[in-house]
Length: 460
Length: 113
Image 1 (tube, rainbow over the protein chains, first blue to last red):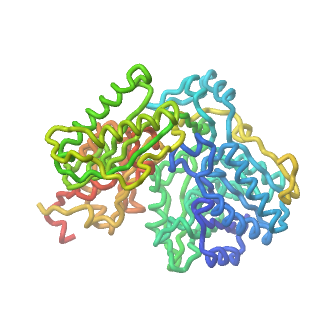
Image 2 (image 1 turned 60 degrees about the vertical axis):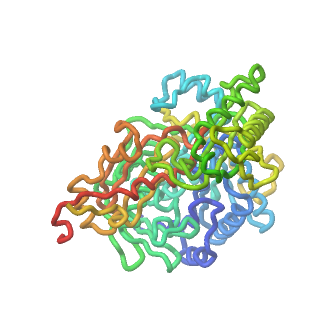
């Protein structure tokens, strides 16, 4: 040790992009590592459930082209976490194919390691039977829920990355990972303080979001020393301030002082944030408190059904006044019409009233006032055909519904589109979001090496 | 007593998911003096959050005053997992509006501080 480690974080999520000028400044700083987080649960359960990427292929390829070329040119590691947004095997394969394509197109060669994060249902069931699950309030876990999950991933810590680095991997592509892991693994491997490495990783995983003005589409440089780290945005239009960096541990977290992760929690009770010059901030004093045993977070999503929606506006003040009654009566007519064909317990019919409580639902404290409503009719049913049918029927019933006090008798809804209905495909929900106690932090995540990878392997 | 609104006191007022099952609210103050004053009187407290969002106080999972960022963070239980049936805001990013209307009673000498 003694030397500082420089870590380049080009963007908040792989595919979100970064200005070319910031990237070039990042390379000029001669980083020891480039790392990027590829995902998030924020976009909802669809991506884990369906196995599709949440980030766009062209955007991801554009970012990866810079990063792969940069890593090869400087001969430094490149670590990528939570491939494809959700980090299951299909996302990993999707991202690996993009890497292979770039390697072929640009004539690159590197030692590649791919680390899986999808956990078999059998293994999850075994953990459940062995009592390894920690209860999670209102999300009951049982074998039926495990079976229903389309796929289940675990958030890996730094350990699997460290193992791959030890084996000589230069480019590491991983499935679902605890966001800071890709930044912290290399310095932890090199003997730096895990607490500072992880806290730095927490900031870098959002790239320049912790600067002012913040941006997820711009690069940040982290510099880690023996008992401190510094962060600096690479775009001179931005600056880090003690407040902007301290405030970052608030972001998307429940508690800014105790930040739990694989193996333990970061404790910020004694952390200090000090300005260094105009644009840099130095952080000291963060501690890591290991938990008595090691917990991994599991994420799973199950299919709820299929969705069809119809969008319409309402301008008639009498209709608006009567809306709650109309919705209730239309729902009853839909249920009545298909009695014997589909039981109401097997589908969901939702009416969203934008302008009234469309954004906050039951949490909305403001009384309604306004002269028009945006209406979204939504049906979720066991098949797409049923969702189409139910949405269509609710829409046509509402269009011509003779509500109390009606004086506009030609039609109740203003449709912006023809066709008026949109089939939305499969719908998912998170049904596993639990901690499990495990023995071996790296053992759950299989590593596949491709030494001298050039984008061509028949078994890929 | 003079009333002062959170919009006047805060530089940032925002909401966001903290994982799929929690919604977190952040208030970042413009200056340390105002923050300290609000902290002293515990102007933001679980009771207020419970009333604003019409959730039982037990569903206000945490409320933390975080000095280094002169910020207050409250986290409430989401009514359902993010993106589940009936979801209105997958990212939870537009649930901050009730905070914008909050006015606090601060001690009379507040302005002189």
